[in-house]
Image (tube, rainbow, N blue to C red; front, side, top):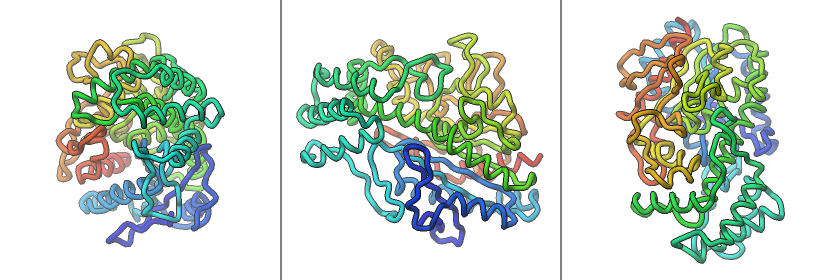
Length: 450
């Protein structure tokens, strides 16, 4: 049921699901959620709207679990609730979780909250592989050439568990699949999904194999390494398209029906940071909002650390893709980012996906460099730029400490003390349901009233 009740509380939030084209799902058992949210905003004394976007690899059950954990931790921060109630007379929040299909395969059943995502194994049957071909094709490119390429890749992965090099026919299949996805490779200031080096399946395979072996045999290596890389960039591009399109339209609709006194707070995690930035930017950064939003909180962002600066140091004269939302003042309050060296999804695998050919001659690990690298993630470094880019670096504080957040300022929170637990390929990427993280979100919302 997309009107969700947080367990052990009477607090509810709204889950609005969209399809891969950015259209709101019409199979919701509770009706069209966007209309219900707009009606609530029109008829109830809402003071603050919190919009939340999940990241990569989330189907509907995963999104439910994430939002339930995040929101439960948020509403458990009683001191923050007391503070915002003191600042905002009659404080009444409306929380909305947005679901966009970000898993190349998975369960998208809105009525079933306990379904398990479908995966691949060496023992998958021919029928299961055909199903995977269809599911990958629906997310990447559903053309005859893409389907044939996917079948070649998946059959090879099943037959060659740990090859020394990528089979030639698989490399060619990957090049065909990359072409069919319509993804491009452009400069660092290009849109998320295009800000990468040219796709090279052989280099991706070799780097992934090297790093996987040194990482205890992590299954990112093998024949499927390049498929995961393509999925990563396709979902990154989809996050942008969804944010700039349907997400931006939805935010416009909410602002149109709300009074000027209603505050808007945007919270994104991983690729959800792209969604939220796109919601503010609008199509190709040309979108216009009724008024600025009041805070933007970007948790472990899987987006370039140069995205918000006016001039990318390693490519002088090129601005970050989302810099216009800064230049145009689309956030009246503070912008907060979190980063942690324990998040291997963005510290290790993000640069692998972006620049495998360059990484053949050096380690994936960013933390051996004196300067910020060309390809780095927001969740690994925070928001970065040249001398003309001003961002405040500070440690994430515990839930009992106050932040000196001020409107119009960007803050990078080193969160390694709290976002640190996790294993496998993602490390601590999803270790964000902490009182300290929720406290920082509340403090950003509260500071927008200063």
